[in-house]
Image 1: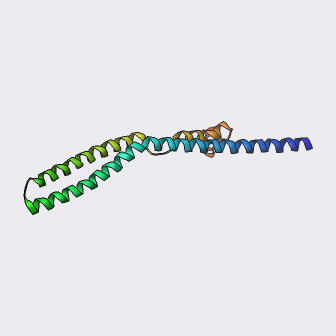
Image 2: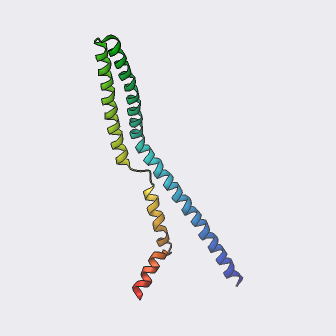
Image 3: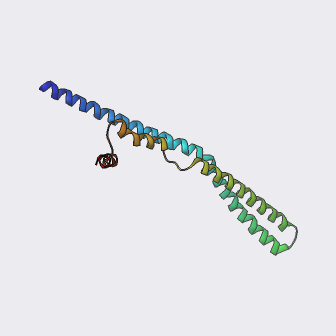
Length: 140
């Protein structure tokens, strides 16, 4: 009888240890997946930040344009206006490209890890309560 108890304890310990390893592995996979998505999204985020900086700088160009246009009414305001329009066009282009990259990458959700985690109970032979309910209803 003592041997059976010892085997059960040893088996329970092994199952617990393997469960811990499985959970650690799934967490590591989720972290790696989120890191990979963040690395893919970095160029898009960088371009969006650059677009914002250019749009901010274009406000200074517009301000200088208005000041010079009102103060001197000479050709220098036209140069400032062209600069402002150039910055705005460049900001719009960077913003569009950055947005496209971010839409392609998608949200930073560890889809592979979630898929594996959802399949783990079935592999361990654990039937989710919803599956038991449908099985029991089918037998009636």
